[in-house]
Image (cartoon, rainbow, N blue to C red; front, side):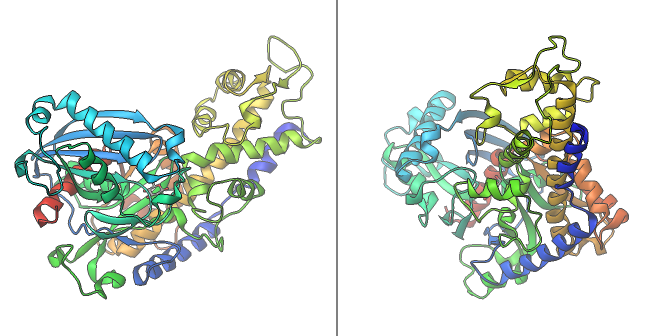
Length: 498
Ligand code: BGC
């Protein structure tokens, strides 16, 4: 079997045809309903206590912080009230040791310190003025107007019980601090902020998808209101506008003190990363299974593990390693490496990232997708420079590209399942307006063709079809965790909750 044929055979393992997409959508709709009825389901369907989307007229100065992936972002946002805003921000990589720290305090103290440093650097005057205050969350010694209301974007599954209250259900995306599970993450942050006497009040707890939804609605006023905010980045998830009466598990509590029920709406955080954890409809290859077994959270976030940036590189890596191990397949095994001018034997250096669990990032899939040149020069160069390959051939690079494209395409088609599920559930296809969907995250930003593949799969969904697909407007919504979180902090302030 030629190398090209072998690559095609592995790529075929990642095929996700229309009939499977449709099975997926049906299951997604079923799990959406279940999640609205009770807690503890696969799709968590978490009520966010946010009951309206902005219209672009909102004003004021707010702070926002974002913990959700590789970086911690701290920003201040001035909303100008005309759909525009200005944003000052700093971005700090989160030390790996804190992602798996022994105690929640270690991580949250670090976050509070970063907030302090940001205030000193960017709001020095304001900061000095209120420096003497004892505590932002209630102690005397400060004026209310001196306190920054802060939107805390915390992009992990949280059981919310109010707009600025919520306990961590589980960690995802490589974080693992068991001590934090079951604790109120707003309180964890507020306590550390207070310990530093910072003039900051954690006013709202925000999932990044909710921020994305709000940011999209703020910046796109006058058009159709946004239905869905979604992230396809390190992790994946979506939040959408639901009818309040459909959120049965919340309505059943008959307690409306934490939100304003008059809009008749509630933004729901689906936590679709955990869609079909039971694997009744999700595609499942040996590479998916091995990845899951070697992850920090086996058996959960099964949809996310097939869709999001944190995992695609590792799926590809495992598929390539299986090819390398197969004596029938001549990947990275040519005695004279084809068009390589060095014309030497291809080999893999010991210590190559290709042989290391989590050694390949999803950025490599983007390189593969982008390089359409005859000899696949960029792919070969990346294999040499980043993945410890010696003299890979053009044939090797073409084989890698074939497999990488299949992994990326399957991810996009799965993403379409989730988007189609939300669109169908909303009933908006029965109207005539455009249906607005905000997306953000590294895959939509940097993986060429991701949104186009999503669209192609949406065409194939029963009940959406070509006509429906044309009515769905998918647009990048930047800064959800900045402006979106600020908007929710504003709503929280209005509710008098903060
Ligand atoms: C988290 C979600 C988050 C998503 C995107 C997932 O791992 O569970 O809360 O919205 O990543 O960041």
